[in-house]
Image (tube, rainbow, N blue to C red; front, side, top):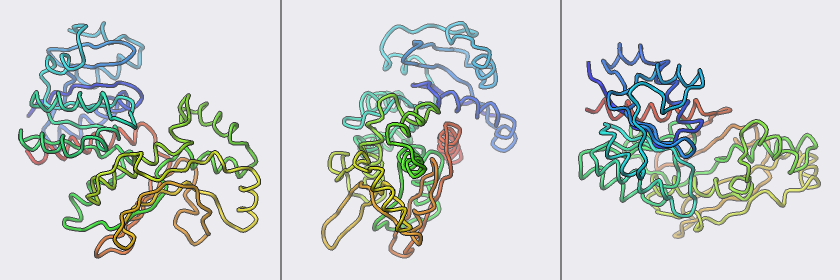
Amino acid sequence: MRTVSLALVGFGNVGKAFVRLLARKEDEILENYDLLFRISGVATARHGMVIYPQGLPPKYLAEQLEQGASLDTLEGGQVHSGSVQEFIAKCSADFLFENTPVNYHTGQPAVDYLRAGLEQGMHAITANKGPVVHAYRELTDLAAAKGLRFLFESAVMDGAPIFSVFREALPEARVQSFFGILNSCTNMILERMETGETLEEAIRYGQSIGITETDPSGDVDGWDAAVKVAAISTVLLGQPLKPDQVVREGIREITALKIAEAKAAGERWKLVCRAGWVEDRFVAAVAPERVLPNSPLFSVSGTSSFVQFKTDFLPGLGILESDPGPDTTAYGLLADLLVILRRG
């Protein structure tokens, strides 16, 4: 039996869901992989940083969180008052999980945290889109130089296999283009506007159920979709892009009249992401489009997402994710963890 230690930087909904998933899957993972996981440290923006030198079983941590316990009161916890990079160094973990809020424009400070983990000899896993866009090659090369891995399956479509399907199941498949709905929040907003709500009312509903941020501009103005287009283009199409290089139009100009006109024509508005080669020019864009019933995007409802790839031998490979949440994202983190451990 092997014990694997995990350091967690960022402990919001996804981080907590990841701990609960480890607890729920503990017996299966022990039986199938002969592995035990221990949490060696947790760094949070609101509640500080705590190191657990002996490691906490995920079940214990999950139970204590459920009871409302503070991280610094848990067994053997040592409060850390230095920098996050110093916290990472002192955790002495095998894996660093970075799940801080995304910075669309620089990827920081997540890039620095992941770099610090790799420099300390930890495999690095993130659900954060920023580092994938702003430091994919740097972090991948650093990991390789140290015999480690940098993985990020959850960065674009939560737990749906976007990157790993090409890395594992479709080796040497060359992605030529893709299109889809990559921002589930705007998909939900546009659907609610079809029922008569205003944009503002739909945003407030999204905020009430935790789908939309307090500041909804990242979703509504297309930044979240643009950074996802940049991530896929960078990793799968070999075209490094930053979000501001993606032609971007959000949904603020979609009025009730436009919704009604599309509905009368049997069409629906969707915020569509596209990237690929047009003749000898690479084009990447996010913009609202009216889609017909024969489009695979037409029936993508609620907070679901969809992406369709064109490769050199598959003209259309579609991946649909229905109504994801923090548990779905947490599964993507677990999948990356097990992929690395299976390869030794």
